Image (cartoon, rainbow, N blue to C red; front, side, top):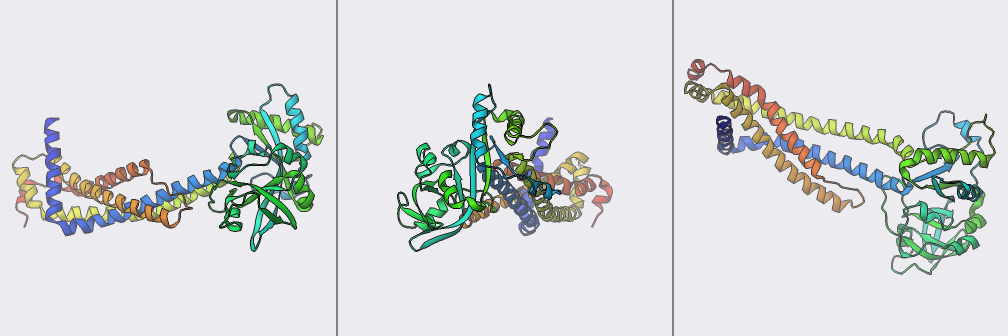
Length: 416
């Protein structure tokens, strides 16, 4: 063991001396690894960012909320069967709440009705088009991640009376009120004035997925008065314990069948959706992007590994007489093998370190240029890059090191 540690230390010293004596060649050789590590690290960072962005966007749906809708949140072939289903009515929420209250040890907490429609919203000379207008009750805050950075959400009295009040998203507030406080100002929606009582905290958007930043929420009574003609409705149900989501889903299906008056022999004419169902649709897309991206960027690292192997073979040829001398003086095959493996690994680790530093700087600049993209340069990615660099050096240097260790000392000493 002592001898092995000595040989290991000596091999590192020889590797450092070789890189210093052939600085230009070492730099050019390491360049392939540097580019490869930058490409792989940036792609890994992008994949992590995409994953975090998806999760953050879907967090709006809530992992402890079930959605009663007409259509399932997945691709369907028999779409005509879903098209012919009866619409989901907001009145179902009141009936469900009575059933939940009457069910001992229910897995459900509260049912909240929502209706939505796309409308323009105006204030003075400013206008925002295609705003997601949502009609709901004061219980909506129980089922959502909504939080007000200014003002408040509408209360039970305003909800019951259908008051003309709204809570607006951050982007809507920024567009309509760029230089003034929106609280207690009146905005125009569908020809009606609504008083702004709250502004949602900024959530940010990612790949066009869900966000409250471009939405407006108002009491359901007011919504039904002005927008109910072509609106889409659903019922959102808060689950008591998300670890028992499957039980809660079964309970909700039973309650909805009673609400719809379905006999036992009839199929469900509604869909119960959850965040996981949407994630299961998006995950294959996300994973395909990750696999394709890492494969393509991995090719650049493969090219760098070939460069390391090539230059190590050159180094073995140049130092054939040196290898013969060392073997004649008693150096073992293991010693020679270890020496060249260490040299190729050291070169790759140096390239990997430089690549990581450059990748970190690039991620920092990308984060400044595109703050909406969730850049995530993790410690796990750094460790993975270091391991990949070391493995690249070991794999690419093994064949030249093996050939060097198998040289015949007599033939090596006579080599010119």
